[in-house]
Length: 178
Image (tube, rainbow, N blue to C red; front, side, top):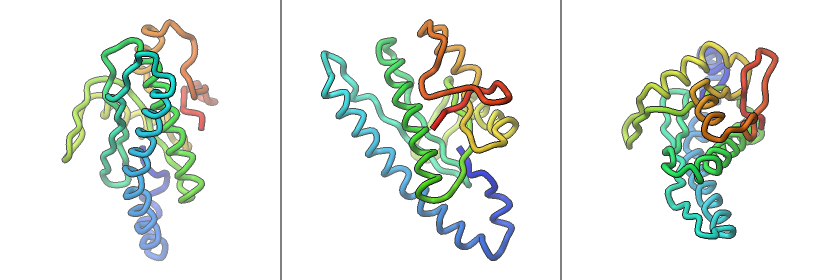
């Protein structure tokens, strides 16, 4: 996910310092906010547990340039797949909404599923590359698109016709509807 118009704002000397301070604030707040959301999700699961264990629900973040990579390890259990994905999409929608309201920043990006590696220092993988390409080439408006790999994986595994918290835009791209 990146900030729409960041490059243009940074080239304007008058607004770049204020923008960099805003960027520093949102990116320092993001990991804390995501951790609070992780805890919130776990508490919700605890209420309805019925044998459902969710301690592995752990969204992580990595920040580079004007981008934030928000990711979740793919659950091994088909039972967890839909629930984790729905919560993940809802959290991404919340992050986008929060960025607009709290910081007056418009975000764009793409979300995908697939091979990916992330640790304390860096993130890399085909899923990230495909997301970046889709965001760069197709997310020209403030929206977070759903990549084809995720759509195909979800619709095959869940045998559903809709993905929660999403809708189609004018160009037929599926995006997270915040």
